[in-house]
Image (cartoon, rainbow, N blue to C red; front, side, top):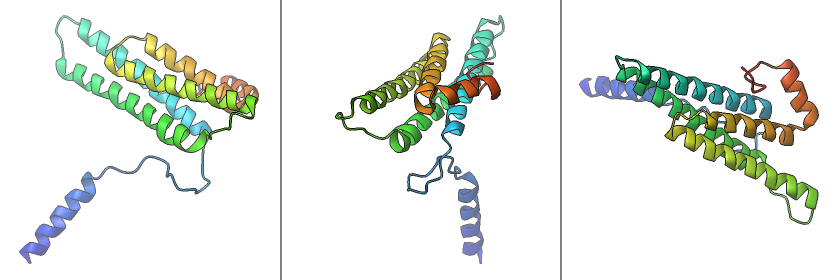
Length: 171
């Protein structure tokens, strides 16, 4: 009986401690929401910016609250990592499809999208390393350019005019 209770306790703790799956699957289920993923990237950028501002404010205070500084640094890095995850696991792995060089226009668009997504990965990495808001600006510019390329100019204009400010890259 004791072994059963212990086993149940261990399984309960393992179940409660398990991280929920938050990424979209990589099986061909056909359920994609590209605009949502772009909106999530924009939200991560806004959170990185807020974290950087809080780190700078707390670091400048006469009485430093190192616990809060550490928490904001962790928050900034976690959101930059989540942004990188969406870019790699969603867009690069599943959505942006390779195009043969023979179709020059489509191939050029493909290469441009790869460059924009790679730029986001690098800017997110740099955002982890510093509190320089230039990296946030770069992330917003790259996301805006990627949205225009991926969704087309009409959809991009619609986002700017009608969606939530974070989704449109404004706040």
